[in-house]
Amino acid sequence: MKLNIALLAGDGIGPEIIHEAVKISNAIAQKFTHEINWISGLTGAAAIDAVGDPYPEDTHSICLEADAVLFGAIGLPRFDNDPLAKVRPEEGLLRMRKKLGLYANVRPTFTFPSLIDKSPLKKERIKGTDLVFIRELTGGIYFGEKGRRNNGNIAYDTCTYSRDEIIRLARKGFELAMTRSKRLCCVDKANVMESSRLWRETVQNLEIEYPEVEVSYELVDAVAMRLVQWPNKYDVLITENLFGDILTDEASVISGSMGLMPSASLGNENALYEPIHGSFPQATGKNIANPIATILSAAMMFEMSFNLTKEGKLIREVVNKSLKRGIVTEDLSDGEKSYTTSEVGDFLVKEILNK
Image: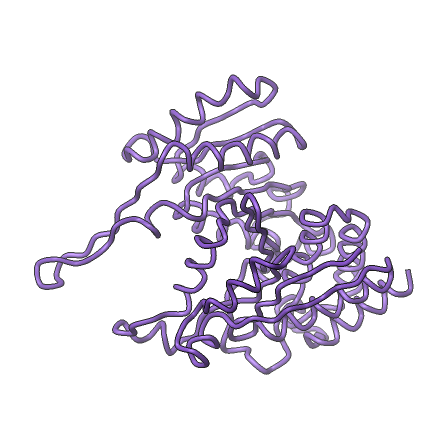
């Protein structure tokens, strides 16, 4: 199979972790006789420095023409620390999601048997955790009306959702639940927010179309608490943009490191795959960043965009082998021997080709 993949390395550790994901993907292509055509594009701070735009039109065209997009990370402290910056790297990510129609962010959280003691939570609470958040990505407070008034002393951000936006996201959740344990949790703040009441009402109206799915409704603050009490009780959760942003970062530490969890951002025509972590600029160029989340994102790409399930399964198998053997970067080493970013990638490539 010929695979046309847009490659957006981004900022900070983005180029380093993307390099390892490309190595592993090329090894998979060699193993299963696929042909990958990588097309690179600029985004984030790198694009601002080059052309003054965090998501240039050339990059958008590359993404539109590709079968899938593999993305690294966005952001640098020099923008974070400048409240007067006229353009920011993160604007590129938001614009990319909107222009590509990537409305559903699929973020799994699961545990690795060999890393069960790395989690900050007790192992009896997290054992068996295998949940998936589907976060709405192109609506809500991040895209609503915003501004300042009263000489800049009052600021506002508006959370706005339409019923259609909720329906298309909720259907993704119901459909995923049907392939798993047929349990779906809608996370909202319906006791306070009108937009959340629309979410709850809309999902309730969809229940009749999916009679096999058991649906629960929980307030976001309760879910935040229960994620650390018994995350293994959840399966598929759907929620709006801001709540999903916060809850998925909370859930990510259950596995033991943010460097482990992959994600996919899906639309009706386009799909993007990326690690859940940020650009980690302090580690840039040091060859210490954990590439596993990006590599597992590539596994999701093979499975979800190309229906290549054997390829995705093999990537996960060799990742589990590396974790079990302690072939890990310093974030997982607990002061014991650690391996560089590239050494982890080299180990995985060797294991794939020797299978």
